[in-house]
Amino acid sequence: GEGVVVACNFTPVPRTGYRVGVPDPGHYREVINTDSAVYGGSNMGNGGGVTAEAIPRHGLPFSINLTLPPLATLFLERTD
Image 1: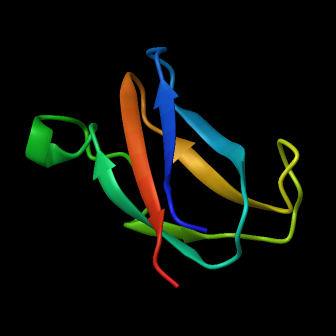
Image 2: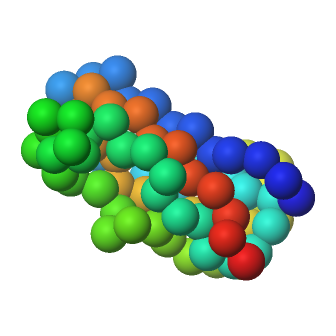
């Protein structure tokens, strides 16, 4: 499927191990991370991307395990 996964953390607390459901397997590249040093942030993130696992979540057959930086928004797109 086409599309972008957007995850927001509106709290000042980092969230590790935050699992989000996705419709398709594959690698999800971190396109934008508002906590990046480029934007003056702390550079907390997901090493450029994550790979979906066959762990259902939010009514979808796959999921990605994210680190959500504090007060940040992530945009991820499937690359394969």
